[in-house]
Image (cartoon, rainbow, N blue to C red; front, side):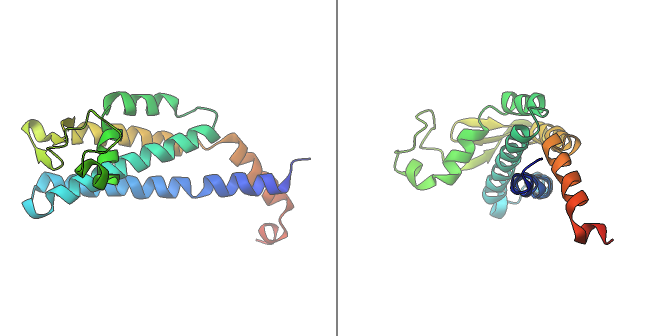
Length: 172
């Protein structure tokens, strides 16, 4: 007989992840709209929030991938292959104080350029790295749909067992 505590952990670990993925996808769309409007006063923060939302989405996908036996592996790989500098972007944003004084872990970061700038074809340039926001949107959409299309089998089985054993669930 399956361990009820293990079932509760499986359900709790997975249940909120699609909600967080949805919030990240909404943030990505929102930030892309703001970046495309390109108002100088908000451009830097909008670009940074876009990077954080993209990073959060791929982090959620990796966690779900662990729970669903690798069913999102292709989309995660495509995402990381096509956005190779996302982790560096995110690290500079999250550990800005370290990079500001040239003590960040990633030596490939161009310390003299910690601001985001827009370039040709709507590309963003940050610390010597380039990010194509439209490519990022397409990849994040694919990743988001993969997350939602592949709930872990362990989760589905745990929910079934919970519903079978739960008097509250059976009362409805």
